[in-house]
Length: 250
Image (cartoon, rainbow, N blue to C red; front, side, top):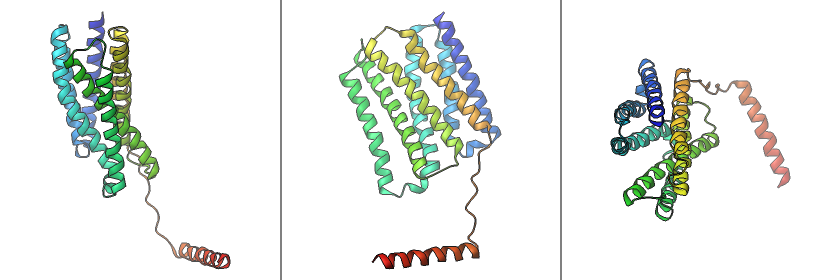
């Protein structure tokens, strides 16, 4: 029964990935999100390989961890792409770069700490390393997601809904996968079904979110209107009032 449900989840995920891929091609969003397109294409190939290997637990385990290497690389590049699409103009600010890399570094260090001092139970050396890498990616994705929306609010950025949707999808999935990996570290093989299905359902939810966001037209924020003569006169009036007020205070 578990194998049947696992295959069903993979099939549903492949269907959603093909929809996302077609939307990116049809709306020519691959020009803006080339790495996200590559990620989706890789995810389709990855899901097909895992579906083929689903009949054998040993083969599925090997295929899963082998394909995870490419998945991690494509995920990092896709998230980086959307992040830079929004904040590229701010990358010349030293505090901005310091804040981003500090958050990423803290996430990776915390993941290494968890994997080293609280390895999964039971865990082989190889399993602990793999779980540590996965935790590092997931914690980084969550931190980047929180940082993204915090900076977006700080800089009052109201457009770029497609980038926000892509990053929120990765963030949601990573958060639920952290829950599953932490449960594995705490409980070992107990609650195995719940641990396996929570990330799978979360990823399907993320894919549905990507479909909904990318299908919708992006909201355009109107640029600020040009100042007119009346605006300049009013501004001059306020400036004069402020100057007189400060003069009295001094």
